[in-house]
Image 1: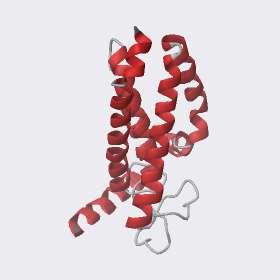
Image 2: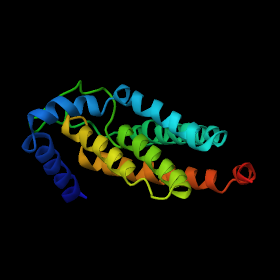
Image 3: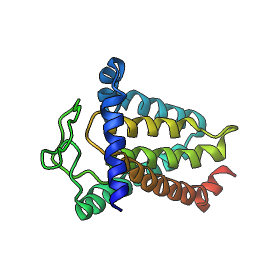
Length: 190
């Protein structure tokens, strides 16, 4: 287990410091901010209602349920039980941290940003993948880029975002499958 934590710290320093570029320093603090994505969420609502009519309400309720479950498990269960300090926390700082946003007072494992965004991407990957010609693979890259930004700005270790991504993907996929297999959605199509 110790080797995994050492590898995690090594990867953190590499991403947080060795990969540093001016464009990432500018973009990634915004990229990981939930308010940055408000236009995308508005577009997604428009897209759902435009393409699926009344069924869009089921997808929206499913997406909200997905986020509530994912955020609760990450923030209230995982973080409060694991209690891993953030890499930018003064107690942990055995290496310099290139911190681009305030550190935050909460714990690090699992990353709620990674959990929530992978939960949404997993949910819509399942929901839209069943109804569209091509699977929306770009959703995975979208969530992964936000998870990467969490490490780059200095508030999470890579293991925090990988575990959050896995947790979120499982939650989103399960809720997506439940919505897809619901009889009231099937009746709505007929």
